[in-house]
Image 1 (cartoon, rainbow over the protein chains, first blue to last red):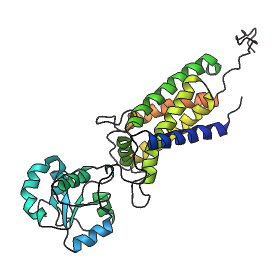
Image 2 (image 1 turned 90 degrees about the vertical axis):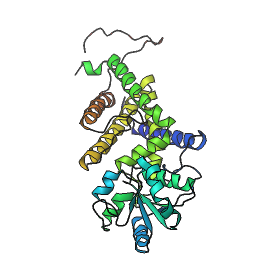
Image 3 (image 1 turned 135 degrees about the horizontal axis):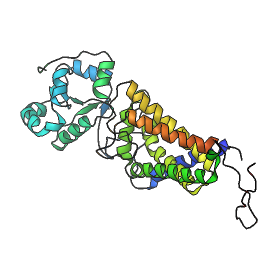
Amino acid sequence: MSLRLGRVAAIVAGGMVLGLAWNAFGGRGIALSGNAYIKPGEDVVEIDAAEAKKRLDKGALFLDARPVAFYDMSHIPGALPLPEDDFDRAFAGLEPRLRNTLDIVVYCSGYGCEASHIVARKLREKGIHAAILHEGWPAWTDAGYPTKEGKEP
Amino acid sequence: MKALRHPALHWLLGIGLGAVFIYASIDKIEQPREFARIVYHYRLIGPSAALGFVPANALAVILPWIEALTGLLLVVGLWRREAALTSALLLMMFLVAVGWALAHGIDVENCGCFSVGGEGRAAGLKLILQDVGLLAVALVLALVPPRAQLQMPGGVPVPRLSNQ
């Protein structure tokens, strides 16, 4: 009895078909084309690092959704801390300014980090729209854009 | 080496390995969104501007079902060698992913092996050793053919008379 590689391919293909079918009809499917952090039907704008840099140069307000300790270590110049884990307190201090700003960009640690999406969601519930920097902090630093250390924006 | 070819051993190993794969697939099938996020953590296939979201999301949707199907075949003993080879390929893929994460200093807090919710096991050395162990079982099942059992027309195995 020899090993039939065609069967291996059939198992993989069968799993693919089952997976895609379950995703389409199982009721808990996710969009194959979108970030899984974005809830279905959610109106979210994600921008890449180059677009974020352009907006920063035009005076957009950046919000750092990471814990404050990360902000203190290094952040995007001009960004204000609005940590997801301390949202209500930080928001109270920033609210007047946020309500008077049209162009807001939120970022966090990128990739597996959901904080920027949560902060953007909470802001939207309060009627403030913010774009999300796709891939967040690593995308910014990988592009070689400026950063700033310390508690000052 | 002779013991490795014993049909009963293959039967047992197949059920054990298959059960592990089925168990591993359940949580991921139930919570694809959470599993997709864990896939993101590895930063191996996106989401990224270059790759798009598609590979990470598609893998999160498909992988658990390949695991489930592989596990099922192993447990019932159908296409056992091919299912074992599939599981070996999956385990090698997991090893590459975990090795990649460790090599790049990526802190994967939940490896996404068995559970996708809140607390999971971290991707670390212990996980690599466990994957290597499972891989060894899978390779035995895939590459060492069990000793053929002669069948009577009624399906009852005939005891061997000699040790040939």
